[in-house]
Each structure stands twice: as structure tokens, then as C-alpha cells.
Image (cartoon, rainbow, N blue to C red; front, side, top):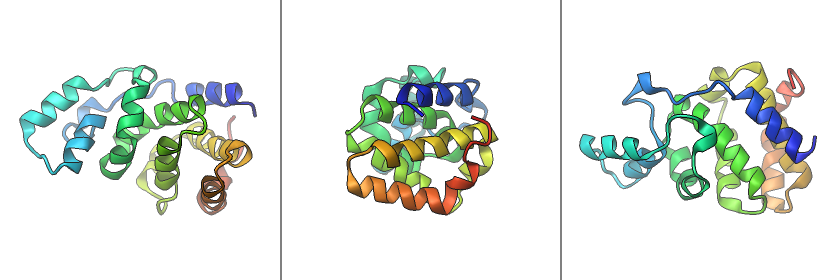
Length: 165
């Protein structure tokens, strides 16, 4: 699968995903995760952070925000919010191949023990994640990330290969 085909598969699989507004305060935005990393639990700060974040279409989340908040988001984000940001982070990784922070954060998150996120994804979305991991294994030049992607793929995601893509 080419990079453009994978980008299209991700867009198709996650096209109807919206930020889970109804789960507030459980669903965490990018800037809210950063506040949690700073031990800031002030409700006013969290409302302002949420207001500043893009929470409409995941395709509109700015690349600068994705790069800046990837590490803290995957440490503090919740599964419902992660389902929203996941395609944006995968798309960022494909557009900025070779920049390690976002890809490393994604690989770390994908490698967690069968997390709730896997249960929240549709078959088509799980297949898109699986295809993203295969793409990383095939095209990434960072040996550590390739090794990690291979282990994660084998242990958790290969069962979703080509289910619906």
C-alpha cells in the first residue's frame, strides 16, 4: 500500500469520527493533556485549553499542535479522545516521515496491553491502524521504531490485517 493509499484508507476509516463533546470532562483535548502533565487541574484552565483546541474535524487539527502535544496526549489522553486524534497523528506521521516524536508516541500507545481503544475502533479503523503499522515496518528507517512496530504488529494488531481495507 502506498503512502497516499494509506492516507486515503485512514481518512475513509475515520471520516465520521468527531471529538466526544458529550464525555466532558472525561474526554481530554491536546492542551488539557498538557495541563495534566503540569499537574494543573484548575477547571478554568481546562475550559480555556479545551476552547483553544480544535475539536471539530480531526483533519483540521494543526500539525504544530500534533507535534507539540503528542507525547503528553498519549500519556494523559482518554480512549474516546484518542479515537478522535488517532487519525490526525497517523496522518501527521505520514506527512512528516522521519520526525520521530509523533511516530514514537503512536508506537508506544499501540503497544500498550490490549487497551480500551482497540474495543472502541470499528473493524475498518483497526485495519487502518494495522496497515499503518505495516507501512511503518516497510518504510521507516529508524531501526528502533521498525523493531517496535514489528513487535506491536505481531502481538496485538496483525489479526486485523485486511479485514475491511
